[in-house]
Amino acid sequence: MATTAETLGFTGVFVTDHPAPPKSFLDTGGHHTLDPMITWRCGNFNKKIKLLTNLYIVAYRNPLLVAKMVASLDNLSLGRLILGVGAGYLKEEFQATGADYENRGQLLDDYIEIMKQAWTGNPVSMKGYNFEAKKIISLPTPVLQDGDSSPPIWIGGNSKNALERRAVSAKDGFRWPP
View 1 (cartoon, helix red, strand yellow):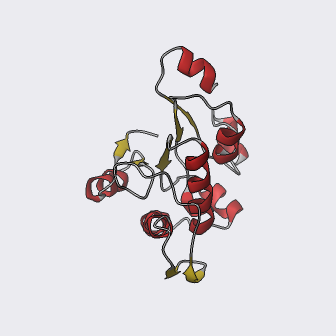
View 2 (cartoon, helix red, strand yellow):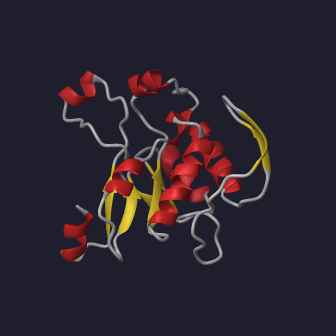
């Protein structure tokens, strides 16, 4: 996919994130997806194409594990990863993954900050929704871009909260809708 996209002049390709879609979603036009992090690593990397997640629902997973996967993939792709994240919307998928649907927006905000701290390569201690880390060091760190220790983070969504989250974020982009 990335090879064809680059040959045709595209600058990026994306993979969505639905680890446990409900049947009702699939029956009404929803889709299964491959895991974005594994898909990009198994793909044939090229020299220019950007690799995007659209949208990666961080709240489905421990943010320290996501930070590790993202930093690893960013290194393997030589800094071409763009992390597109969103709060998510499929309640059944949150239930299936054990994630907190009602607090998904706050979890997204918190998890972005936790990942940024982990990506510094410095010891960090933090307590989150369902974890506590004491003086951990997360390596590798992402590829430095313009002096920033995190890969570009694009916040997406099609709600008022998503737009407000993007407007107050000091990071890179907003995509409307996902």
